[in-house]
Image 1 (cartoon, rainbow, N blue to C red):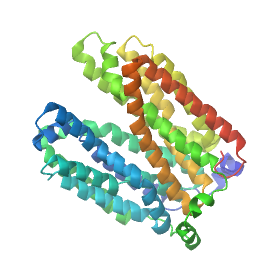
Image 2 (image 1 turned 30 degrees about the horizontal axis):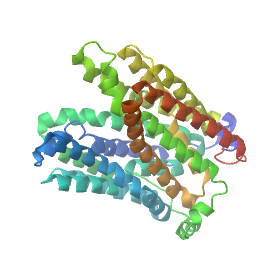
Image 3 (image 1 turned 180 degrees about the vertical axis):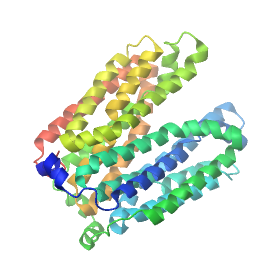
Length: 418
């Protein structure tokens, strides 16, 4: 970010409130929230649905539940760069229309699945057709004035994380009221409303002819980037963010059982611990985004990683459940600024014709962190000790802070280097 873009006087003088970017942001927030809820709401009742589809053995139910849940994120990670490139070529709004309509249809079809193979296939289809949240990040990053990009991306990030938090809660409340299959139909209907809002309310500046031609050249996106280090650093940072959030997932219930004296409260406390970090991120994302607009996105990234690393140490030595809840909440406050800042740094360091592709790879890296985190956390927790999960994640986050600081110092000053 250039110095003038962070100067309060220049920001005040610039016509930053002109154009439809606020309406675009509101629609993207609604669409991202609903699609993320749809991807996660089946978690509480997924084993029950798998059993309804004909799987009888307990071990098979657990195995198929894991396959069905992870299928969406696997296919989404594989196609994210493709949708990003098509967004560079044909416009970001068109990709959001495709994603919202595709997700609405996929969710309705999941509600009429007849066996577990169809369920897994339709979950793969949902991930393949989806990508609304990542597409929204790209549209907001490119259509919002740079002086307000951090705040806008932070606000959008809050909606995305709110979807992750609300999805399992809604999934636990709706099936007893309307049934499992009707829950999928209801989710599809709400996403269809997001499709209509996207189609009729979002306004996007046309893709420049020169940017489109540049995006069509093979390899032009990567070779057209003056300095690859900021982009690669953001990919790694996104992976570390998701790894840090997910590494505790396999061990949390067992770890909480060591801290809570009443066995009946273990699952409740574990659920609160899992939600605490997401709640903290929801509350802090927009504020940290606004701070990044003033101080520089990279400075906030380094600070967030360092604070998160420091907060992981006491998590390994807590003696009560409420202590773990508080520390996870504080960690969520620190990590809430990372997603919007990652998107902003990538956007400011790549040409317009490659922004979608590079942000698509960033999304794939984040999905990789969601997969790697539980694997690493489960292995370390089972073979080394549960406290070492927190300490090992601390070392990774600290390494990320140091690495980002070094890359930030070494790159030449320019747009997006802030």
